[in-house]
Image 1 (cartoon, helix red, strand yellow):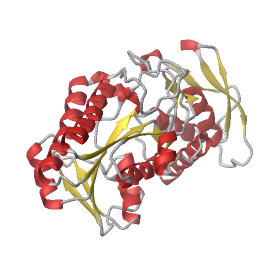
Image 2 (cartoon, rainbow, N blue to C red):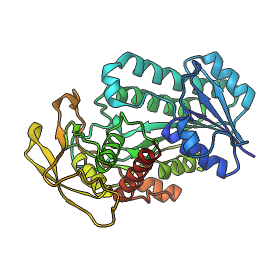
Image 3 (cartoon, one colour):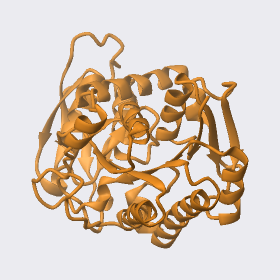
Image 4 (cartoon, rainbow, N blue to C red):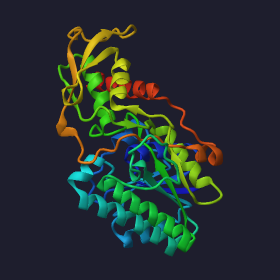
Length: 354
């Protein structure tokens, strides 16, 4: 039975990855914040909290001594480093904490592996935010790097730190450059859950207007459950390497809104442009008998709020996952329409349980 460590096990990716590894027969040790503040609702929602092979432990990622002790005690075959402050918007508000925390945690884990368990395979959860997203080209493992946020800057550092330990110390350090991947386990501070949650609330009759930033921004959105399969495959490869994980398609925030509301049974039309753009209800789709009777056509349900614009907004982001498909046999299988439906249905179910 293999032993794996997942940092950030209580996060979206950590919970899905824990489920995947447990299903494959691993002993999984998941790290939590040392202050005891971690919310375990994602593990609960997947029915994992009391799994006999899931072991939760408090761990200070910013302490090299803690990481050395962790590696010495567990002797894991695989480490999946997923823990990080991952909100781009929050990174502009807290740049020092974001950059320092992300850099230190990765360096400590790699150094602990180098010193204590040199055969351990290490996965670094990279991000497409290390690219500029300024043109229409697809981004692959050879694309020039140009982060446009403190979060992207921090993750660029961990990308090169992992590559350096791979080349300088022969550590099996692999990086997954992950394009946007979402799920019902996303926090509502992320735009996708903000959208699907609002669509569910409006469908249930709550009178609110969803306020968003730049609707023109395009992203390559996939399903988190698909992406953790890619993470696992990356560490099963013969050699450590870097792989882009993406759907190879992009949609705008506006597209995501339209699909999310359609998944709740609400047809939308967008009017105006720029900061004056709004979305109004046009019709109600068949097959949604539980839609609130308070809804009416012409109702404004979405508007742009410039307060949600970022200081530097990345534009188009499309990943080229050809290398992962060729070498790992991995590709994203969940389409955006399916993803929106999965997320909206989960948010509708949450509202029904309240």
